[in-house]
Image (tube, rainbow, N blue to C red; front, side, top):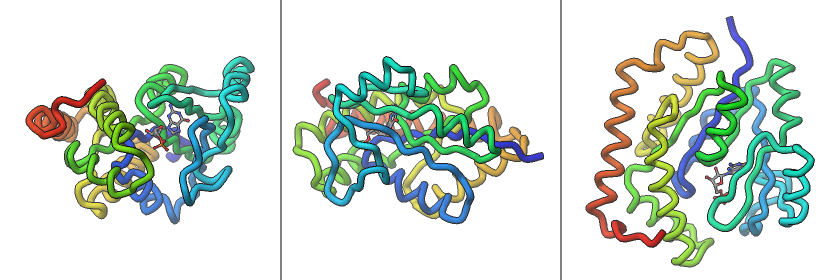
Length: 220
Ligand code: 5GP
């Protein structure tokens, strides 16, 4: 039997999560939640597409009015998920995808224990740093803050239901769809199976590599 599920997908920024998600869900009728944020719009971003861009005062009003399902601060800015569209879509039987960071993911898991938490790992922190540099949308200090934050998030990813590696795009998309399909069909056999050991090994490898890499002394 199929039922609507809430999928929470996290990945450090610059990890290629956007590409994995758009490839995985391009032909699937899922509801993709659009978050609110106080960060500046990047070149190429459009209001209402990647985010709703609002100022801090409006964001704090949304917190006060309890309009957000979850929210967090991430490298100097607020990000939050509007509650109503998520609740409505789940009620209509649509799968919902939230693309949010770890703190918000754990808040969602508290209010929706059935939510499925998936973490997308970068091949290494250095790969992440290089990708953010190549993107060219932030200065070096901000990039370093983001990479440092990424390491923190990776350390929390042990608490996720699944971790997948975005080394090869096709494999990452296939892994994600395998998780989604198995969860939608209530065959939760993948969870807490040998897959879990693989995930833990992946997480440990990225953390270990980070300790010996040129980014090991990132400022907090
Ligand atoms: P970026 O500035 O690179 O677009 O996003 C920074 C981080 O904020 C990413 O990890 C992204 O997944 C996360 N994020 C985006 N929207 C939300 C949200 O609504 N809530 C939370 N908690 N995190 C979000």
